[in-house]
Structure formats: C-alpha cells, structure tokens
Length: 398
Image (cartoon, rainbow, N blue to C red; front, top):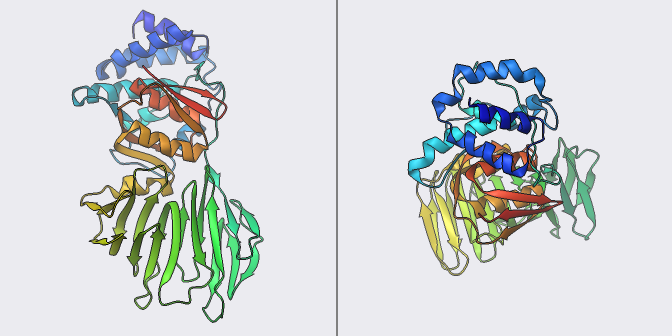
C-alpha cells in the first residue's frame, strides 16, 4: 500500500477526510489491481493499525455483513460489479471489492473462498449523506368489503374476522383466508403495501401471493365463480393452487394472466415502461388486449402499455426476477434508472436527478436488509454519486 493511500485511509477510517481527500482516496483505491489488493503488505498493514481506529463507529461490521449475506451462500453472479465499458469490467470489479473491503459492506466476501479470514472494517464518512434510511419492513393495509381498514404488521397475530363465508386470520406475518363458496354475495377485499412494505397473503383456495412494496391485490374472500379472478397493481409473486376446473386469472388493466397451477411473477408498476410476467414453473397464457401468448418455464412476457404488443424473452433470468421476494436486490446489466425505481419503493424515498440521467448499467446482488447509505456506498463504486437529505435522494451529475 502506498504511503499516500495510508495517509488518506488514516483520515478516512477516523471520519476526518475532506471531500477532496475522499475523492483522492477512492481514485487510489480504484487504481489498485488485484495483486496489490491481495498483497501480504496490505494484510500486514491492517494487522498493525487495526487497533488505531474506531472500526465499529457508525457500522457494526459483523451485523452488517450478516444482513448483506442473508439468505445463504450466493452464486458467482452475486457480487457487486459495476461496469461502463466491457474492457474495464474486471478492473472495476476489483476496485469495487477493494473499496467495499474498507467500508465493511461485504462485497469483498464475494471474492473470497469459504473459510478465508475477513479483514476488519472502517467507519463510513460521507458528508453527502445527512442521515440514513432504514430498509422496508413486513406490513400492509387490509381493506374489507365494508370499507373498514385493518393494519397488518410482521407479527400479524390477533386478527379474527369474517368476510362473506370466509374466516380471516393472521399468523406468522401472513393473512390467511379459509372457507367455501356457499354464499349469495361475494365480499371483495384489498391488500395494499405502501412503499417500504412487503406482505404475504394466503387466498381461500390455498394460493400464496407475496406483495412487494407499493403494490395491491383485490380478490374475493371466497372464490365462487368458475374462474378465480384477482386484480393486481405493482409487483407480486404467485404460487397458485392447482384447480383444472377453475382457472386462476390475474388482471391488470386490459392485460391478464391465466393459469391452472403454477409459480410466476408479475411486475406492473405505473412508473415502469411495460408490464412483465415471468414464469418459474408450470404454464400460463398472457393476454394483452387482442394479443395472447403461451409461456413455458424460464420465459418472460413483456407487455406493451401503449398497445397490444407482447414480446417474449425466452431466456429470462428467474433468480434475478424473484430476488426481491428472497430479500435481495439482484441485477444483471440493468440501467441505473431501473435500479433506482426499485430503491425508491423499498426505502420509501423520493429520487431526483441533478442533470441528465446516467446511462450506466449495474450487475450484482446485495441484501435488501441493508440501510440506504450502505447500499448507496456500493453504488458509488460506479463513479455515480448521491446526496441524501431526509427522504430526498439526489443523483448527482458528473
């Protein structure tokens, strides 16, 4: 490690670096190649100076790492690698790893073999972050047939209601409907998650639905028609109970997904340019106006909002699509604006752009349990910078 880098890191770890020194520090880190990063000299330097820093100030390294790695061992694609041009990708992967090593966000772990010793962590000191924002939580609002509203949280216990001919209860953070269709009037309920919330629902037929942040589903308390019909907004994961006599239909505007028993994901936010339906298991028919298309597992249908068009990605990445329900952000060559829309929903923040929107793309995976500043620190490895003030996040122009 160079003498200048040692000096700058000394200030960085103590939270005393100026904005100019921070900029110089990250430039030097980015210039390191993997041989320098893995050198014995660097490890020795850590061993010598570890006690000189308040390495836990502002960040609990062990807890942060545990949160980031929540969900078990990740595959090779689950590192943070940010690239602008293919020729620079490997170098920037190592630069990101080096930086994350120093700020305890765990990206370094993704480059290590199991059993390798983790190096200590340093203090986050970014004057552009005036505060931090906690990640989303499990919670939702249940609107009953008579218009009354029930707030649901992660405990979800103590809920005992009757809707039509259905019993409604909650246990282990899941609202559950049970009953049959022997009733003269259908009672419709709506489950809604605000930004920063996520919640699971067990329908009366046994089907499971998980709502992502900023989403809603309207459904009958008991299915009694020949079709099981629900309406969805936002993003939801479906695991449909098989019933060949009664197809399950998901509606969004003039679009619908018809299934008999299968697992699939629907992403249909108003601020997204299209609606995407991704099939993990079984088979479904997707309809957009007058157009329709059958899907097999591993395919994703992209439904146009401006017309009846349907295009199919025959090699969709299922793990990337459903990472959200497994507690992860995961992207493969996704535009910054796409990533930031997900970030805005999960952290319930406003995002503005100071100048033109960057054209950068991102590839990587990280737990959705990290705080916003922990996530932003990783994203900044791309040379994109942010300013956070309250719940307003500004993406700064270069």
